[in-house]
Image (cartoon, rainbow, N blue to C red):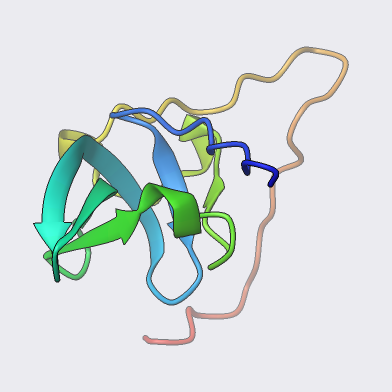
Length: 104
């Protein structure tokens, strides 16, 4: 019997959970559910004010994947996101528009 490789997620990593978007792994804990001992990722989704527990052995099967911290969409006050850096050889073009914003 082959043992599946456990995902390499750690506390404070940002992950994408398909049904809820970007969340932050707060901790990894063990819990007994229905008589079975499970290891769980505890993931916080600040936008929805929700905490989700995902069995570590099911994380990849459900589509959970890591995301670079530069991609996170959590408020800066609760996350350690950093803006991507650019070099002189690859400047970000400025975008200007004379149209009002869609919600104006």
